[in-house]
Image (tube, rainbow, N blue to C red; front, side):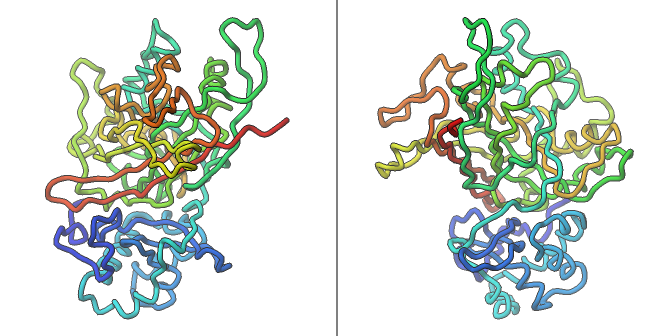
Length: 437
C-alpha cells in the first residue's frame, strides 16, 4: 500500500471531536465490533471517528455507498469482521475511501451518515472477529536476551533466534477484549529449594506489552505466502497484552515451551488499525551486519525499505489503592514496535512456508516489545530483574509482579512530522483473586 488521499494531513471531519487531538482522526478509521449498552441490539461492525462510531450495519442499510465499498459495508455489518477480513485489503480499502470522503468537512453525505453515528461512551465492545487460531511470536531481541539471561544465564539467546521467527501456538478461547477480568491462574510451580513441585496460585504474575496482528485474506492449505505478498494477507494491528505466569513458566517451559503459563488470559484492544492507515508510519528494516542475514524467503526489497511499523507503546499500572484513592495510573515503561527483530511480513511468510493455512481472523502476537534501553522493557520480569528489584509506584506502593486488583493499561499511537497522529486507543485488564479450590 502507498500514500493516497485518505492520508492527506489537511483533511478534517464534520465530526468535530475527530479534529481535536483524538486517537481517531479521519486519517485513521479503525474497525471494531460493538453494540449499544443495554439496547439488546445485535453486535455489528463499526469504525471510529473522533468520539463517535460509524455503525456499519446502519450504513449498509442506507445504500449510501455502491460497488465494492457497499459490499464491504454489508460484510462489516455482521456480528464479526471475519467476512470483511476474508474479502482482502481491496475491499476494506474501498470502504475506507468511501467513509473518508463521506466524513470530510462539507461532505454531501453528512445528513445521512450523521444518523448512523453512536457515541463511544454508549458502546460496549466484543472481540472484533472469531479468532480461529492464535500464534504468539518472540520478535524482540532485547526481550529475548533479557529473559534468557534470567532463565539461562549461561546461554541467554539460543542459536536459532537470529535465523528463524520463533513462535508458539496459544489458546484462542481465552482471548478477551479490553476490560477483561480474570482470576489469578493456578498451576504447578517448584521453588528452588523444594524437592518436589506444588499446586497453587501463581505468585509471579506478569503482563507483556505486545502488538496483535490480524490475518485477512487466507491462503490455500499447502501453499506458502511469499513475502512479497505477505501484507496482502494482513488486515490490521491492535494492542495486545499477553498475561504470563512466570513461576509456572519457569517450571514447565522446557522442553516444549509455554503452556499453562500463557493460556489462561490474553487481552486485546477493541480497535483494529488497518495497515493502510499505518502507511505514513512505516520504517526501514535492517539487520546488524554482524548478525545472520534473513534467508531469501524472509527477504524482499519492500520489506527492507518499509517493513517496520513505528508505533509508540506505553504501559501503565492502576492498583486497587490508586483506584480507591482516585489517583492516576502510573507509567511503568514506554517502548516502540519499530525495535522488533522480525517484521510482520516475515512472520506471515515464515508461518506459512511449511504450507500452514492462515484464515481470516487468525491472530498473531508480536511477542513482548522491549526496547534497547532497560527502561523500555515490556514486562515486569525485566523491569524487576526477575523479581530482585522492587519498582516504586510513587504512592508508597511497590511491585515486583502483579497483585490482585491490579489493572494494567496499555496505549499505542503513531506520530511523526508531516503526518496526522493516529492512535490505537487502549487495552485494559484486571487481575482478580484466585478461585478457591
